[in-house]
Image (cartoon, rainbow, N blue to C red; front, top):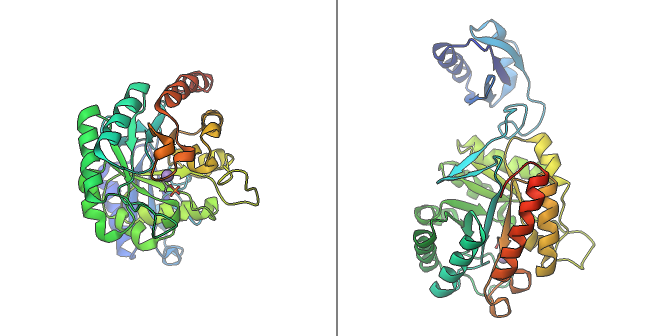
Length: 337
Ligand code: PEP
Ligand code: MN
């Protein structure tokens, strides 16, 4: 249920409504918008149906949330969510560009890449220390050593860092170093992991599973949010189709669809979506034109020697050129980079 409150509602009335919701065994989630405050009552709604809830002081209307995702839905929060990551804002007028290598391979390479992407205008640095590889024999990541290099790169460049968390048992460790934790496509429906990241307040990049629908992606965001963490950034990274020229098929219509359904920021990863470096720039520009709030792009100074995803990684100078083109597209849609 959504409680739409009167513009004149007082804090005491909000507290009272929340207590009332709790007394029925539901959890209240307060969302203070520009114009209105809304309270979502999450849990078994049937118990509320026979209650005269509109009689509560401060309540204007009580409505059912029709979508299966509640906290993630635009009905619950009409205004766009802007997520603060240090001094970077994700979801605002300015686009957030996350760039860096697929994996942290060694200290020198990471620091070099971090310096280059910073200079080109990236706003966050990416790099996996725990890698979800298809083969158990492929490079699995440097683990904590990789996290330490990420922290050093942040120190050097001032860029906040994004890195993947694969196992709830490593949550404390990864969160000690990361500014944003990534839940990868392969773990989008790892519900234990989603609940774990939900109990922290660290921003999360939640990547769409390669065979998941938009609704399932939003339900996974709901898992995180229902635990109390509202800082969820959705990421479209391509889905599996019959087309095999590209690694995946970038579902760009997911961007405006998600914007209709949800208030959460949405970014696009053209690197994993296409699997080919020369398709990254055109799809990155298309993503911004479609309304994405940012991008995640793999950059490597020696793609031919990369331990993972070299074929889709941009050379730093190509990334820099892409940033220049993005400025023009961003301007055309009223954004800045
Ligand atoms: C990654 O970002 O390096 C990654 C593994 O992405 P995805 O989970 O989208 O495949
Ligand atoms: Mn990768």
